[in-house]
Image 1 (spheres, rainbow, N blue to C red):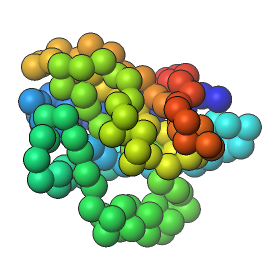
Image 2 (image 1 turned 90 degrees about the vertical axis):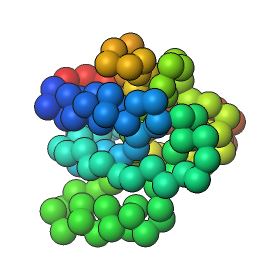
Image 3 (image 1 turned 30 degrees about the horizontal axis):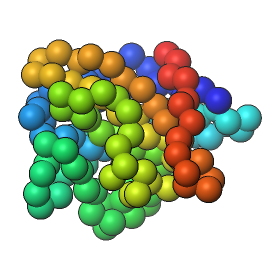
Image 4 (image 1 turned 180 degrees about the horizontal axis):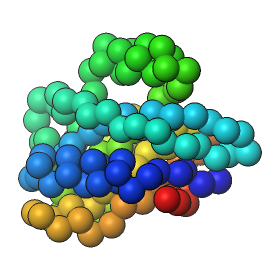
Length: 140
């Protein structure tokens, strides 16, 4: 079940992660679910990390901003496919906090960043029973 993201969008996610460092960045993955578990990202939209504390280890996107993303995507005949965020100085693997705040179906792209260096980028989907994640292949 691949997540297709073009080089330009990957570059935008990486830039956002570097700019936000040492805090976590966050944003939406927007595009189309073409069936068979394949999602095609057409655009990435930055969100403001509004978490009130520990922003180097936590992110929060306001629910109203998510609704705005959903409306904006629908106007373009697309959907919010998931979200991206960075892990400053930590692996690109979901934390327990991430699992507690995630929803099944969505793709969760995590970028490991240390200063100007992007270490890795991986994508995850929460299992329907919320017990953990399955890794999702990222293809260009």
